[in-house]
Length: 249
Image 1 (cartoon, rainbow, N blue to C red):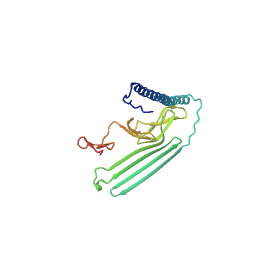
Image 2: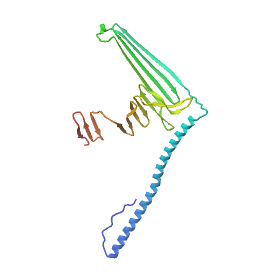
Image 3: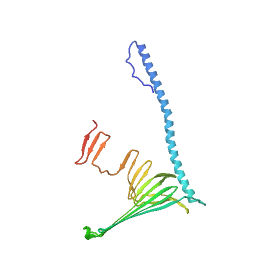
Image 4: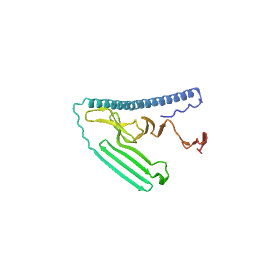
């Protein structure tokens, strides 16, 4: 867009001043007309972009509803899946005059075209000769279970969300689309876990999304920290009260 300059101070005879003012007003009218033409050309493009997003969202919604209707009312269902299952185990035993240490580990692996699931189990037992080692217990045990799921962790309408879920007690849940031959399942987020996708890292506690990191921004209800640096300009310390220090140079 052309730059509109302020009119020069009138000079010369009255007729010359009138011509100067007319020339300025003519230039101003041309500039404003071009600006309006550009604005009118941009508005339809922006409106079309917004309309395109709304249309895409509406299509996803309709596709999800149609998928649910088709699956629930299907007269015939045919489903084929290649399934891989394996179990890996390990045992470790150490014995001495002071007692016995027993460790058992196992991993169950199950894979199909939609996911890879791995269940981990760890169990350890200590039997102590209390008189020999001077401890106040005769036995001690530890049990830990973990779960990792890679593949489909949820759905956005009919579009699968690919990611990784990590936790200690994770289950899958049936989510509305149910048939006699199978269900579309996703992660049951009622357990404590973290879920990674290409766009988001979420932390779930007690079934609630307690925090998430997305688009370069961390969203969380509470932060425990000793120091925060803001944009490389401010240093905020909480070690003894709140102290602000300018470090921007």
